[in-house]
Image (tube, rainbow, N blue to C red; front, side):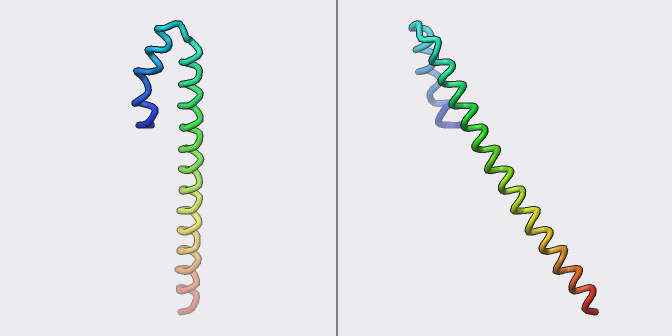
Amino acid sequence: MDGLAGRTDDVATRISAGEPKALVAFTDAVSDLLATEHKQWLEGTAQAEASLGKLDAQLKQLSNDK
């Protein structure tokens, strides 16, 4: 998002110069970036849940071994 934040002045200048599609291009880029970051977050969450599930299974096995 930092990279996009640095481009807002350019987008605003282009819009002021009569290029309203610059706003559409910018919002499309923001949307794409957010979707990518959300996907990465979901993948990280799934990996964390899998690790916790594995830990739970190992702890249960330890309890059963007693």
